[in-house]
Length: 395
Image 1 (spheres, one colour):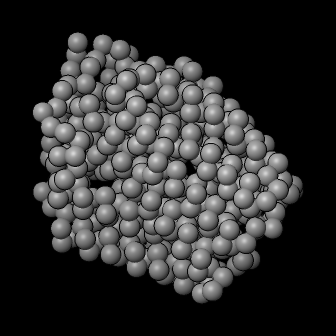
Image 2 (cartoon, helix red, strand yellow):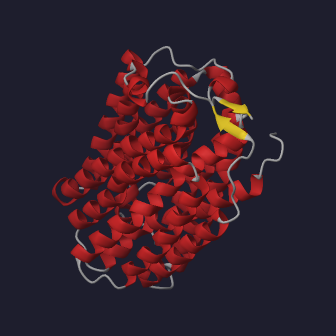
């Protein structure tokens, strides 16, 4: 392992960050539904939540790459997210909820891409060990998603914003103890960001990532609502969310060995094929607990494998001083625009064609991503050594 790696501080940030995600993603839609918001409005609010991933990370990525002080940017973003999120408690209309959602997520979504850079710089040449730190985010997600699922059996969802505030406070608190890697500097790259971006593989990768994350849109916004519509109790739904994240943890423990053995492209194809199957199963077998469990286990591929590959490829496509903007672009295009598109159209279509058909459309989006990868995404830097992927040097 890397010398002087602040393992527990880095892991703690992921624990609280994704623990908070385990509050918002599975249950915020249900909270909104119980407050009287329509499916279209819920889809639009989730789209806003992800649209800020298009704007915020790239703005803050440029600031961090230009002026440094990544740790300070992360801390400020976490503090602002905490204060603005408190407005959810008092928002009494769709307009106010939309303004608050956009504002707090603008800062919340700024933190993670910059923290990914901090983590990868601490790891230096051992980037394959990233997953051993990131898996603590999965533990945080499991903890909150199960806890809230149980609590929701006994209490109305009005408690959700207060739990969210506790999560944001935890993220800010742990961010105060995370420092940037000392004694290194990013190597100058004889290129421009635009030149690195105009690369066939990079363009194809971002298109594939956008389509895959768009296929996750109905899952993030409506999975809990969908299962409740099909008669599943909230505590069981929380456990189903946890099943997917447990599968993700297993992948994070193994992926550092899988990438050198199988290569990035083959693993990406598996992840995309898993997404095609997962969303079809979710649509077709909403009343079958066995099939839902099996479909959730495919989260190991649709998120775990793809995310680990993405972290490796983004740092290959955008090395050196462009790391922050590369991570921000991945967040903006894939996690932002992709998920927002999926959120919006799932909300738009949910009441007209039903949840089953929406998940079939998600499966079709993943199938298109699979075809693009198979035909156009080739010669990935899958056999490079780790020191080729993050170009930093000792001072």
